[in-house]
Length: 119
Image 1 (cartoon, rainbow, N blue to C red):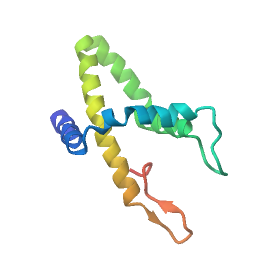
Image 2: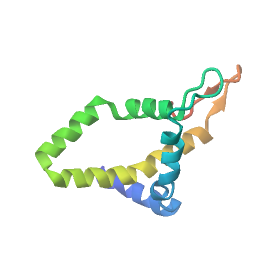
Image 3: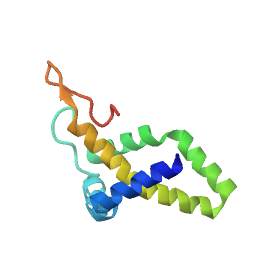
């Protein structure tokens, strides 16, 4: 399973031109550069707020405890492999979210159904 997940991440990274490296500066500018700015419009949240909610719902407290356990049991080698899987997992997640946004639909009331948090 690990080989399939990392292999898919490597394949998508090569096909898409390593977006996790190419857009690294853009990501920081978009998210961290707008921390103090208010979100425009009613019912909107800031980019940092959206990132915080997405990370909290994706990571969860179990993964934090799991990473600490892996580091304790596996030593520094476990940290290296966590970084490798995280780097290639970024591309897999980006592709998943892009497809979710592409295939979302509007309902009769004009609200979007599906999308990134649906996946």
